[in-house]
Length: 382
Ligand SMILES: Cc1ncc(COP(=O)(O)O)c(C=O)c1O
Image (cartoon, rainbow, N blue to C red):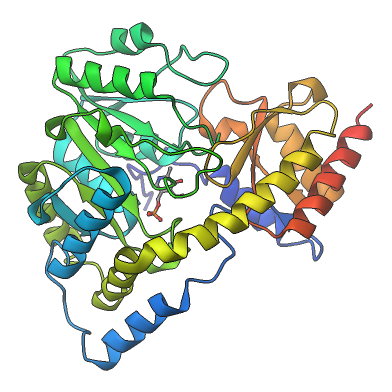
């Protein structure tokens, strides 16, 4: 029987595809991965272990264990200076499910969601899965900042939300305050929700991060975050949504019906992370900060590559136009000839086929070797 699925439009992500192909080479340098190669801090692992030994192996409350929800509110207040109550917090399976459940709670077929490119492809896929229409902002300045009027001109009677990923995956860009204010202003005047995906907010270099929550009234604001990137906990799958209590309530209902709850023991690990996390984050940031410096020092010596120094995340978005190749030709050529894996820019929206994403989630020696191979690849193109 032929099986037609509503998921047929979702292609295998280019990063996964490149990653799989890279496995055939013993000497491959894989710079596609959005997952820190750092181990989760030991006290966090110990907290999960202790929870298991103490018999915390049962279903957890649908919204998350109350101590964790409180710890998330406290952590967010310490970091962002914004206050949330426990009933405004739901613990989810990573930020990814917080975002999907929120879209599910909000988007009816035909509703529109505005997305600012370059973007994490899941926003588009999730919106389409729900029968919604992703609407991409087209006018950006050379620093990838959206133009306020252009953004506002996309708002229609069907618009429900604007998704704002800051710091941005794939570019590492941090949007200036004027952009955050503009998005908040548009959301308030048109009665929209801002989906503020701030999962990379701890990985910020040489500057302070200012959250969307500083400018956007809580009524319009959905704040997403997780343990994944800040605490090197991608596999633990703990994220959260902070938002208006009535919105959170509907997300909890969806969670109850779809996954019941986040596993108990990982919630206790997250409790340790959010309670004492302020101590772990600087060490993790220090690792990426050093790699970023090494990477930039080496990359800027490679002719034909143009890039903005990333303000945050562990990604660099590189303009390869001067090589004469598109992102697919560049990535697959580089992989075949030099065994270095990058992600082609078309994965992050139309108009980015002249970019590649490089993740500095590998050690400094591999980064230096990787950039050396990229240079050799470009030199052979002439
Ligand atoms: C922009 C962005 N948002 C959300 C996520 C999901 O993170 P989590 O592991 O918390 O589900 C990712 C993961 O790569 C991401 O890049």
